[in-house]
Each structure stands twice: as structure tokens, then as C-alpha cells.
Image 1 (cartoon, rainbow, N blue to C red):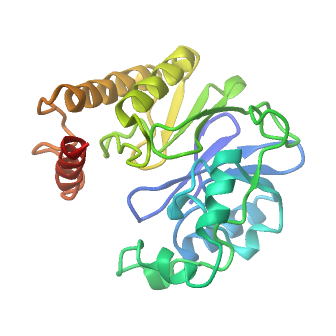
Image 2 (cartoon, helix red, strand yellow; image 1 turned 90 degrees about the horizontal axis):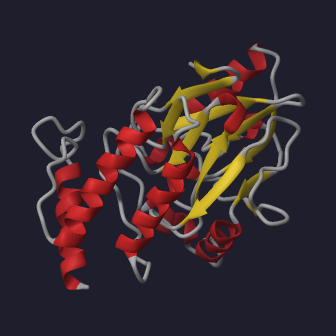
Length: 266
């Protein structure tokens, strides 16, 4: 079910890792950001839009990870965008034989049969300088960085006071660094600075996974993420509720331990 979080902005939450699909109303249809995960949920989202008399005008994937690249035929054959870096990486990863098996191996076994693969990753690079989404609706600024992945982007819907953060600023997941980057710590801290520069204008922050936050929440989550990353940088154990006794997911402490080990190896 679509839940309103701001004027003309609604969220559809997946049962998988509290993944948030974001719908922004426009004049000629909606912008659909990170459409969702499970086949039946994507079909439900399409039905909800149809029942409300809305169609999808464009899609956007915040970054090139499988759970942000999915689509459903009922959502329509419309332009689906990503940053130029994300689109290029997706083309490379999905080229050649065997890509379906490679992607399937990344999906938890319990849900892989419920994830629609046919339209996965069919995104194109944003035109022009890549800083705006081309659609018939309110201005959506693209804030590209590589904190979590090459070509990762947050989206600022300024006149709605909404920041769509992609896989950052979660209350459930600690920052997940891009292990492919030359400077994952520096990249992440730089991205947090980028988001902090717009956070004062944000009334609602929507992470890729986790709960939607209200006024002032963007700054608080930026501070929490920065403290975590700085602790990794300094070789300290973070004081972070997402990996403590109150952790939402019991596998996040293991994710944290893996990041510590990989950084030590670097």
C-alpha cells in the first residue's frame, strides 16, 4: 500500500529489508524511484497507481545494486534512468551469458523465486550534465557520489522538502562502504558532506531501507553515519544502536565486522 509522506510523495515498503519505493506525483504521471523487490509487491504497486488514475512517467534507480534495479511490466515501458556511472556499470555486469545466475546468487534463497528478473537493470544514463531528472514534474536534483556504490545518487525534491537518500541515512543499516573504491572512507565522508549541505531544507528523509524520518532527522542520521565512518577510520568500535542490542536486523553486526576486516586488510 502506498503511504503519503509529503505533499505528492508516497512510499511503498517491501517486506524485504524494509525497502522503500518512492512515488513522486507529476503533471503527466509519476516518477518511480527504486521500484521495489518482490513480484507481487510490484504488481500491487502498479495496481494501486492504476486504481488512483496515475501512470508511471519515468523511473530512477539510485544505484546499480540488484534490489534497486527491478521493474514490472505493469508499470509500463517508460524511460528508466540512473547516473551515467551506474548505467555503464549495469551494462557491464549484465553483459554476456550467465548474468541471470550471477544476480540470482546475490539474492537471498528464500525470496529469489519471487524476484522478477526479466526487466532488471534496463536503465539509461541521465541526459545532459546528469544533475536533473527529465520528466514532466517538479524539479528533482540528482546528488551523485560514490559513498555506497559507483554512481550512487541521492535525490532532492526541493519543493516537497524530501530527500531520497538511496542506501544511506538508514535507521536500520550502518553505512555500507564501496569496497571497490580507492578511498571508501573519504568517499563516504564526502558524500555525507554533500547531503548535509541540503539537509537544512529537508522535512522528510527516505532511506533505501528503514523508516522514513521527519524534520531534523536528516541531520541526525548524517551525524550518526559520520560517527560510524569516523570510528572505522580511527580503528575504534562504533557506539551505534544499529549494531548493538537494539539492532533491527541480527545480521548487521556481522556486516559491520566484515567491513572492519576488509578495511584492516587494505
